[in-house]
Length: 392
Image (cartoon, rainbow, N blue to C red; front, side, top):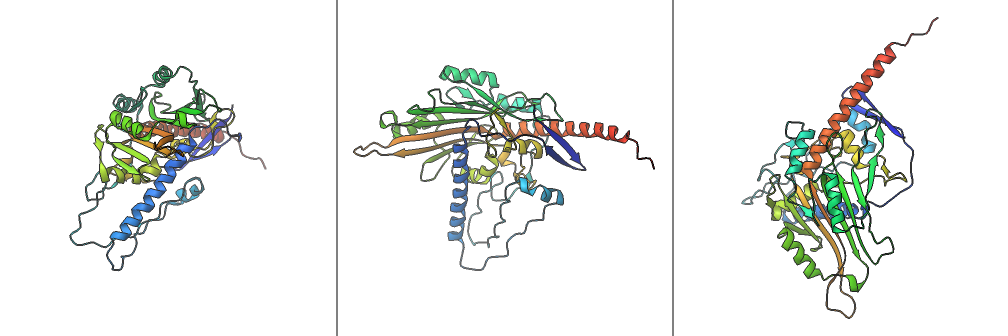
């Protein structure tokens, strides 16, 4: 069995990976995550264009500078995505209302990172969050459900679904510990079916119990006869989840945002949170599973080794909005067939995520891994100290 060797030097854990490359295996919804990434980029561009149109015709102040990362972060820069470029500081506009900042009204709150506490970042805290996450569900599969119950709910929806666990390759510091970030259920009709329907259940892992923090359902309607009308489909979504918090992409993406108490956030506030957190909320990026249904160096691994905000230069988010909110994200493709007046659904992806549950699970798993790394290195140090020197 392939293992990963974990080492920690000074304050930074340097993980040496030992694995074999595998060919891509099953699909796990990469199309959906690619669309999320593309949508986030488009939203950022639209927001920048809007800000430029609102600027008065006077010179801008000098752009804000960003402190250089410490050498340890520079050393692992190749593993991380490019940092977002600092935006130019906008001149103060007279009689203009301050722009909403998630969690802080018109005032920018300090960067907050999820930290271990009795109610967050521990297996017990993760379980408490899971118990309150069930207000969002897809065909009876609720967020916060233990994995076994979620699979039962999926099979109650369609008994033909067969679930494949996709795991991480084991770390030497945690021998025998199997971490399963995804349960994948492909379309029961097979690749040649005229319509598709598959699920990805995203799970917390050791030392937490396996709770569902994310559900992705990917549907495709291959013929006009199987394509539902757009208006009736959207009406059904709104009847189930209520009016959406915001729209994006010419109304082809509907977004619902909820705070840690399950209260829906609406309008510009919701769109600001979504735009700010989209990059942090992307999951599944990195390698496809290999022929053994194992991930290697995926975003799941990076967050496990580096922490929830592994790609944010060690920073969190203003007021912790990115690890305190839940989201329901619906993206659809539609078309009106020739000779028809009905606008029909071609494909639709529903993703719902409790990022408070995700972050708490990651903090607990990261803390557990780093403690195991310390013990492993201490043991190695003791063994190395017993070696004798050369005789001359």
